[in-house]
Image (tube, rainbow, N blue to C red; front, side, top):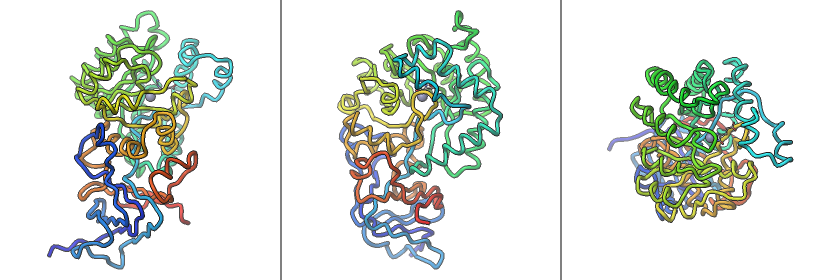
Length: 424
Ligand SMILES: N=CN[C@@H](CCC(=O)O)C(=O)O
Ligand SMILES: [Zn+2]
């Protein structure tokens, strides 16, 4: 018999949510099938999962004096959570915009008046590499404490100042190298039209296509390319050009679409074959049907809708009914969702998007993994997958989402190492 030595064993797990199933985004009823095991047990060897089951380990798995054994009685265990849409790296903050909000000024109006994203661009330009690194590291630590083991992070606060865009991407790279949480980079120079291209935005689009994308791709600085496609920002036509060029350069397209107004962004996401379309509050019927057909993942960001004080939330129920795989994320950023708390987003998923707890855990694990092209490695607890595991100090999945606004994390294991524990 071939023996394996367990480095970590988590035993007596009251509720073990495995997400066992195909290594791809789950849709429709699949999102409710979470592979729940009562009295579960998980064994890890080095950085990989070697067993997931019930009650006992099989005979070929050995416990040694070096094995870390964790008792998870009355606890919930899930795959490491994945925050698949964040603007992790930026300078400054925008709490002063609260007063604009109180006066009822809208997000895009604040931006058109030179605030919003433009304000953060100025702050990010001024910040040194080290300042940006330290600030992002603090947020990443918070995310990890909320149970997040993989994060997507975008540039987008340099715009035409390519040096600043690159500074953000290099911070992401260095954090990925040094921090236990894995970070996947997205290039988002097309986040706003820079001041000096206000009257000739096509020129900026051309610069992105001919100068920036080739450089980012050649240097391997990003896996994805994203565009903020919205009325008054980048048009559908401009977004199509940018993302088509990105694809040609080997960057996988993602898109911010129909966040505030329906513009035909969901249709474009389907036409281009984006891996995900994000926001989608105003997405059209036709666009959603096209996304379902093409298998584009809908990344929904309910705390953004909440923070922007919009009445209307993305129609998650319709998306699930149409067979679109749904992911949920914080959209952590200084202007429209200043929170690192993915557990809070999960609660909003129930309260505002009317998703079930089972659909929600699918959306922040396997579906989020698929939206980052990482579904073969993470997103479920199965033999051979990376040992990214969270233990929550709650008796069941429903409780995690019901008792909202607090941190329920007990222990976070990343690549087989305990990186956070609440049991000092
Ligand atoms: N909508 C565009 N981008 C971000 C907000 C960025 C900002 O306001 O700084 C978002 O996804 O919500
Ligand atoms: Zn965003």
